[in-house]
Amino acid sequence: MPKLDPDRLFPSEPRRRDIARDLFAAIEGRPILSPHGHCDPSWFSENAAFPDPAQLFVVPDHYIFRMLVSQGGGLADLGISRRDGGPVETDPRAIWRRFAAHYYLFRGTPTRLWIDHALEHVFGVDDPLGPDTADAIYDHVAACLERPEFRPRALFDRFNIELLATTDSALDTLDHHDRIGDAGLKGRVIPTYRPDAALDPEIEGFAENIAELGRITDCDTASWAGYLEAHRRRRAYFRKRGATATDHGHPSARTEAFDTATAERLFHTCLSGQATAEQADAFRGQMLTEMARMSVEDGMTMQLHVGSFRNHSGPVMRDFGRDKGFDIPIRTEFVHALKPMLDEVGQEPGLEIILFTLDETTFSRELAPLAGAYPALRLGPPWWFFDSPEGIMRYRQLTGETAGIYNTAGFNDDTRAFCSIPARHDVSRRVDCSWLAGLVADGRIGLDEAHEMAGELTTDLVKKAYKI
Image (cartoon, rainbow, N blue to C red):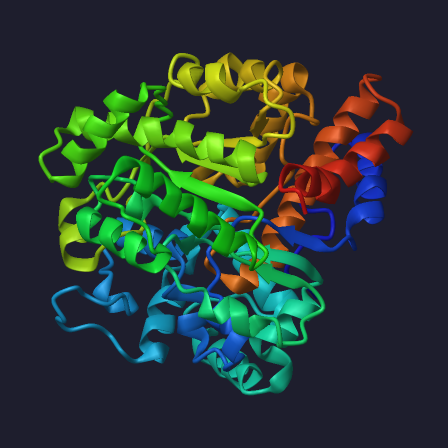
């Protein structure tokens, strides 16, 4: 018997459950559009076999190792490389056994749903994962990974992915993307322009990154005008390789609209390495407005991910580096923060700015009203801690009544774990159908409207927001 309940995440009340089933049946087979995520493009350019179950499931997934660390596990014991080259567990079976022995920690979490879905639907595993089944499941998955139908390109087609966007540094050569064009995939893999390394003065190596940006674009990035031109040229380089969007991970939603002389002085202060924390934040705010202006010029959709205290643990950052599960939600303000940028470009036709936050309290108070008024704004789906059944449902309830669904951007999985992509989209589609079933059952919309909305939430809104 399959581990997963076919009615999972549907309402328990019979009439609503029947409506949700009907809606889901109509959209379950739609292709996957993944316009924002962190998959490695080399998977598809090289098409090498995934090394082992631990490298596929555990090592790249901060949802997994942060939970294990919270119960006293060590990152090095899970195969996470140390910056100082210190001892790290290299036996994938040992990593997998630690994971399986503590799999009970994920009960009730979305991670449990994603992993169970991947094990069952991708690898045909019928037994629940635990210490008694760890070796058998490891051996089964490892044997699958040796077969050609489990190579990245084959799985990409099997998952019915129509489009997958990676997230790439402004300094990336995009060589892997250039080679993917000959991979014969049924869908497309495209880059996304992430300029943080050459935009955030508080990122290590900022001045060196600016110099490298100038070198690869043949621009004088020691000048403000040359620096902006370098970004324009780099964006064009990404667009030629299929990119339709930029992405910006900032501590806050602060934007600025300084005059040219003020912006130039601030740029030189940041480039000198002498900027205070306030000046660095002001520069990030100015650059969000500059990026929005460039999006008006070139049509690229702009994504803004804010509300995260990134790399919160000093020791983890010191010993293991960035993105090791220690991003923590913080209070975030949008109404005043976005006003300078919105005064500049908020009414521009065709501009798409997608807002993501880890501060749920702003959904109904700030974000839904803003997106419900400004033509340029769209609401991104629940992110990081809130791409869960309850988080998605809260999001729909908190934003739907003010912004509707047509001021949102559909769903994106935002994952580094390739085999979780179908699972994450399955969860989102089921929860959206459950939400719509409630609206139908309460007499707020008709069943025909619910079917249309289910299709919009699944694929159509994504295509519109990301100009796919």
